[in-house]
Length: 269
Image (cartoon, rainbow, N blue to C red; front, side, top):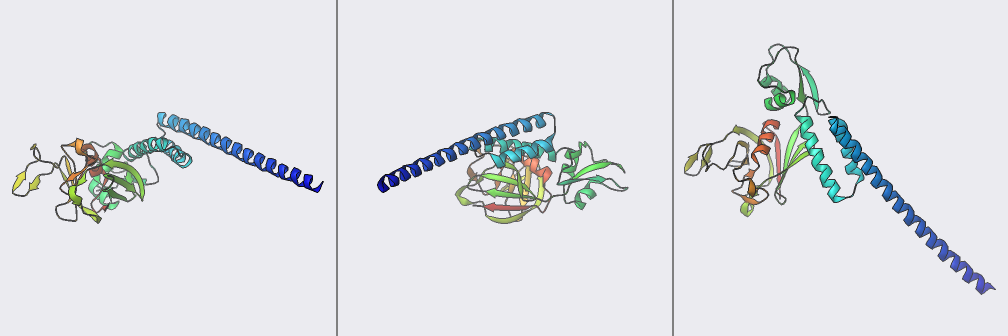
């Protein structure tokens, strides 16, 4: 009888253990299904907010989706939408955690205001829909108050625009062949529209087909190196330059408007 008792007990334990594993597995499947439904619900909420122009709400919900989902394709899709929203908010009158409303005082100019808040005249104008530099006392302006920085990853040929250490947009770039793009920490020390290319032994004007610098130049504090546009956008994403960082013209024009002099640029392997 003792032997049969042991057998019954063993079978009972096996059954109980199997049932526990089944129940745990079932709960896990249900939890996974619930999570997918939650992500779907959040995605619908985000798209509805976006359609209504509620950019701050849409951004908040898309960030929640990134926290909830593990789907690689979904993550990439949401990341792109988030970056689009980030730039829309930046170039709009919408006040967020990185901006404030500034009331124009007598004798103010856009240059003075930009210098006071370490931003750019171009960003103030784009955020407030200004078509000229003329402003009036008591006028209310949105002004960025957060610090921007850049990280350039040579291995990925990507440039990351950061604000308060959070990536707000990713750009595809071209970097130097034969590891000619320097690594380290640098700063933007000059900005030029439609730059002339001072090539060894020649001066190439901006409108020349031979000028490879594109529409903008953001010079670094290492002689001869900078971030610039391109006349060969098909070569972006490659290690093909003489050492500078090339971008699509529309992308470098965007950065030109956003980044003040002194912006930190970190280049990594």
